[in-house]
Length: 428
Image (cartoon, rainbow, N blue to C red; front, side):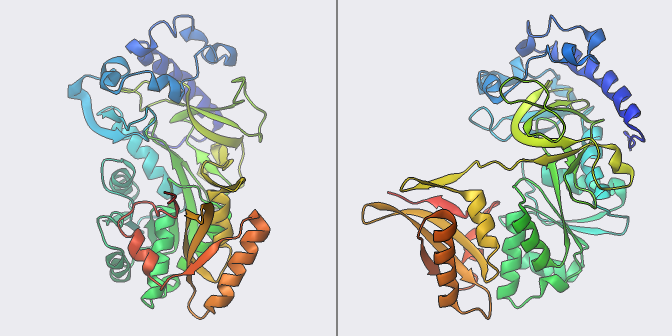
């Protein structure tokens, strides 16, 4: 690999010292940063006070650049050095396509390859990759990077390109040891497997790697039970690269701090927060900055950080970051805020419910919550409905209308979606 794993925190600090200087020097070449970095002393960047003179770059600042001017104002690479484009999450109102250069790509490959190693994959493992294989980089990067660590890959793609039943057939035929995809799609495949009489927990898959969606303990437990596999999570952002993954303890993401310099700061003051307290994650790419010179990028992630996690082995040299999982989506029903994330966890804890969707509707001129469920084979539907109604009322002070669907209905409905659309506002 072009960037071996560091063997000590001192080695990481030396790398950060060298690469922070390069990162700031690169940024000074971009018109966007003109006048914003003149007061920063390149020779004193290891001084935390000097480093914090660099303004935190947030989504509002990026939105101030018209999309059609992004490449002229923010990007610094000549076109002949561009290797590919990575789709952003739409931070400026519409997705941007970040150029990655020939110089960026080896380090991006290293960052994705490390996720396999961190969760214990070895040469001889075969991964069934169900991430999208489109303009978003994650799927293709994971597929290409696997060869660096001797892992074989079936480039299957998400359900919108490879039908879910075909995915199950390939798992049975190719005998992969790893399944990779978004958590919602993993649950979707498990539910479809049950409708087909397939015992997915008895398959060859022993590890699952997820990303891109919050992975709550309830969702993790349901995935692990359905697949009979250990579930790992990974974390990255297109403004940087894949930045970390869980180790065997699965107590947070080991962040590759030789590839991304990270800070956890107070949302209001921008000052560092004590270890273990919730703050805003601020990221400076140390190697993937040859075209997009992000400095102190605040993605909006709220996290805690600890210098030492519970996992052992070579990745224990890196700090551990854990998402705070604060609410981002909710329904407001007759004055009650119902968090999508909390409701999803609640539903997944009801063992008799295989899958669900929740819709906000108008009923008699009033807002109403309609929950459609599929019931586990062998469970009594009327009894499950009573449980969902009473427990929803008890936990959320909302009485839902519950509809029982034929097993497989949601699997077909979610078939063409990259992320399962479990929540929808259907009010007219």
